[in-house]
Length: 210
Image 1 (cartoon, rainbow, N blue to C red):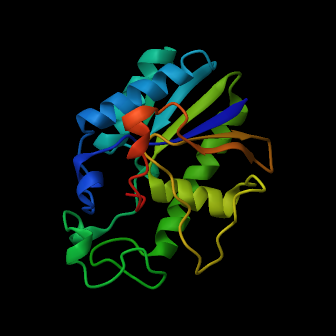
Image 2: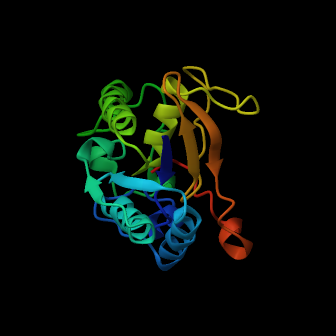
Image 3: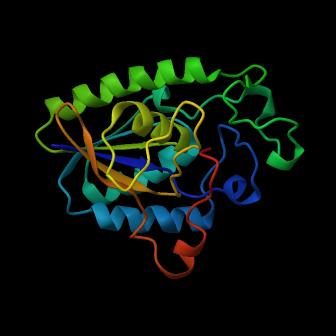
């Protein structure tokens, strides 16, 4: 069995560099990206799709579920880090770096609280993957992918593992990592957007992890 870890497709807020609101949907470009991802995964033997319950992740996961015929389940534990009162704000209008180690968004999650939630998500993901005969697709968000990769996974030798104060690992829209286990789980494909070509690939990496 394998875990197919996926970041959602592009949204208008990604392109505008705005801290996203929970109900932000995929853009037309994001839907096209999700369709390309789904086509890539259609013959991979995915038997279950688990996703964040935020709109942009659900819309991406629905494309994967249609292409694979796998049932879809949402789980709030896979949501992006909660940035509280700064959601809906352009990055350029923020006085502090929202990804800073010591930054605590008003009304949101600290890094420590976020990592604890991702730990719970990882426990569930592992259990589902180990219990299934086929592969598990997990559709979530950039910072969730970062937290999992930096703290729970063995990464390819070409990827530098970030330290506590290091830069975030970057995951483009619909970036795919394929994890093989059991423990330790290894990312044999990491943050891959090979399914995005031409003009889609040019802007695939809407950085910032939101």
